Image (cartoon, rainbow, N blue to C red; front, side, top):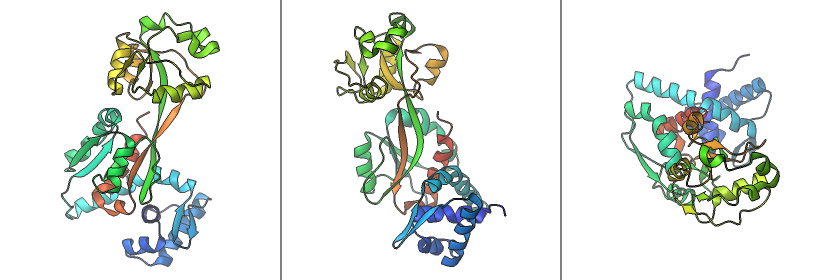
Length: 300
């Protein structure tokens, strides 16, 4: 037996709606047919995809992984068929929120082909908590969140992990003993100015705890509330800082900035695609959501 496209389409629909019954209604087939297709897919994969609950279907971790792989292609095929059949699509902009750095360097370029095909987008930048509040109230359709949403009515799909690196310019790096840094930790760089994204050192604090098993006690020399500005300060030898690798990939490749430490397990943070539950039944939002899941795999 081989996996059929209809099984994957049914799987994506059940995952999004959280219910076999709702999926059957959405797809225009019977609930036993939905159950049969999911069981066939589970049998082919050799693992359970949903826990059957009295009030719906709860995705398993295997379902989370499968969704990330197949949702984009399934949506893209459905969109292509709709265009070929000449079906009208609701002409309404989608409102998307996210952190300004990742949105401008990765998200905006990733959706350029969809924009060329007629998708309308409106972006809003900010911190995750505020953006998720706007999502819950309907002001946003999708949020690229740096934290896993916990609010009821919001569903989140892991998109990509960002990896953090301790950086300096080549000139400043010459003042750092890599051996001392590896053995003594922050004491080896105590004399070098620290550039931070915020006064509370959020990114630096995560790195210090993960890599050095301590908390930072220094006061930053410069605070720049935009990671692109932090990168510019590091490049100009104003000080050292912690940045996500996606933001400085080009600078790392050219040697404009250099890593001061390469821990065996570098700190990471997961980005999530957050939407209101049930909203992925809207074709344009589903297309955007699936498209980002595909493109996100290339961001690291």
